[in-house]
Length: 588
Image (cartoon, rainbow, N blue to C red):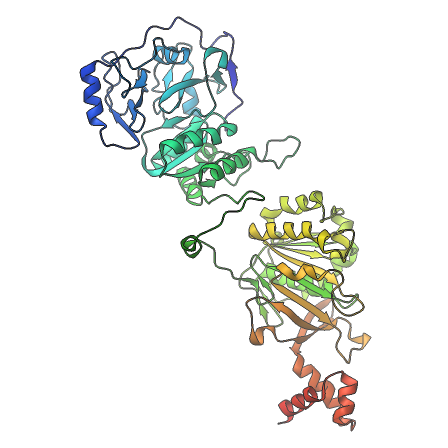
């Protein structure tokens, strides 16, 4: 990763010095006419042998011309100008400091910095002080120079000496194809070039990604842009998780259109990835480049073709039919019914890729369980007992828990501070279970729909990032969830846990599971059922049966006691037709 640039504002050992600059060389008329014919009808950048007789270059890629504008530059001898200008004179009357210092330097065959970084020189030079010289241009005109000392320290030609950094870039290698790779630093660009053989452009720092990309987009309007970002997550500051390399790459990609990729390891750029893990790791990471997420508040409408051809991942289930991927789910129940037992079991099942009731987790997924009220010892005992009753193994990293006695209390998740805590853990989970709303999310007024808006926006943001969320809530005296019904607007699934009609406190955690909303799931999968937690010898496990079965067993008890149809309906709370249907179903 590049170090902070130091302007070359004063003479020092190993730094460029001021000097009188000689007049620029001009293209003779006959050569000028010949060049114009060669670029007639061409688009983009073309390269030819430099027509300057004093140029030491012998390859056809030293002299670069922008066919659209006519601007030219030789990366060997440093001449610049425009082949479409009137008259024979095509440059300025005098070389800039950057041009002069570039012309005085010699081609770089090797250098300690290149050896350290494990890359080659692609068009670089070495000055008389032993500094590696990187030329940065804007639209084919040399703009500034970066000097890299043998130690790796970097100096940028100061603004006072005519250096202009903003929007400047350097192309590493000639490149092929119609993809532009843009990143910070020469070594990173060289590693990307060696991995892709594509057109790779470097800038000197993250803040210059966007202005340079804007300049390049004007030259290459039809090319695909891929931003190869530095992972700056380990750079401490006011926020240790602030990743300037990635965020600036995302900002640039949003501005000009493009994809973003980044090494997974904190503190790594693509050269670090190359050196530590090989060129294949660079290729694989770039191959996973993706469009950046939309900016907050940014709305991009899609036309019919765009929505029909959009590359959208298939939406599956983490626990079918209870929890879809990118799902937002609400589970509510009266106090003391066994919500935490139920949600812990679901979370452990998801982490194990196992089954519970008639539900199946197709593969292990990472769970973050945020508990807002349980004593740590009791939570430990419940998890131990439920694991003992499961016929499955769990990767310990696939089930993570935040519980007040052991982890510290979460900030209010209705506020940005609390939401940031969960957001910063996003790489560690696929689903977060929030148990429960009254202890973790304080909107100030539970029945207020406007107060819920900030929370809803956060939940939608987590969904956009590919996360699923399960909200656990209390039922009110009416038996329905407490507070605003507006919570249900964006939810995929709403589940109510209710006491069975013949419930006895000795039954412990026993309840009916009712799907009150299930987006995209129908039929037997969402039929209500009765669940009961049973245990012994320190192990707990669930039994279940369809609700029709449970209701019929209750009806059968009344029938055996001689109750009439009407009396059974009064006792069970079922309608007479429902009682009749169940009797007919089970007795024929």
